[in-house]
Length: 367
Image (cartoon, rainbow, N blue to C red; front, side, top):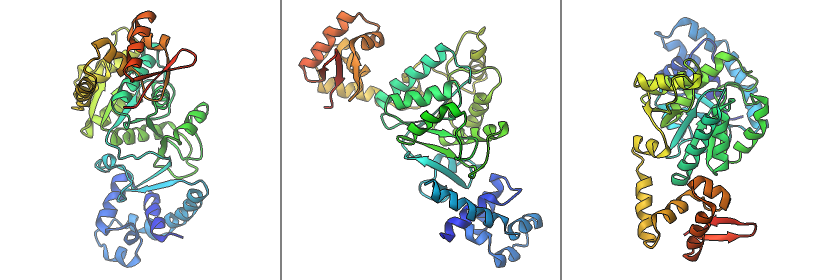
């Protein structure tokens, strides 16, 4: 058995301690193993006697042994707060958990991590906003991670949009990795493990509960560079996540809506109180975050393809490398007529930027 891992997990399982107190213990003793040293504990005269008793009774180490069995049996990854694979953005938050469990392939320290949250009662308007935002960001930042909570509504829409655009997407869960909640999102969760991650601070066997989802929200807020609220009522989990992100010093953005729309009131409130900045597009997010790659990419494109006119450049920007797209879909994205779009595709094909495929489909080529 890996004794080092055993002590790391046991630190997270000492009863009656919160995340801040666990980190203070780790900082005081210098390592997880030292926390469980009877000699060191007896020398720590300033340690609360109740905490010393909870450590010495040994239940945390017993539970850690059981947890390691589940970790090995179910091929889970463990991220300890001092390890390189622990999310560095979250580590900067004072109440970050000392242990995270995960399934999947995501590098949670990618260059850009964007949280997208919102109501469970997403409207068609909100879903469209989410899909367009993720699509447009994917075209500029193919290595960005989309982070959310796997819940109904905006959360699951963001995860699906990320998968559709070949982005990594990570979900933070409010329960152990033995289950998926909601159950109907199991298929999406399975896909996410191929190009993303499922993450939780909770040990195997921990069931879902309302208060745990509020606790989970701080991880979403802490792991991201910025948090975007798509739709929200005046009260709800997404507003809590946004406020937590702001408290952590993260950038917060929101899409506004009509004052009479129930699920725009939360976003309007965040903007009015200057908790969130107003955004209307992916480019607004990029500008707000000083991610100026979009403009640089356009300049590079113009240098590489000086003979493209603006409509041709715009169509080329809308297409995704390796993805088969129909003329009709591209025309809708361009808000152009099919004949006009077909003509633009022909020009792009002639200069070697687009490949025509059987069935009236087109594919953007790598350059």
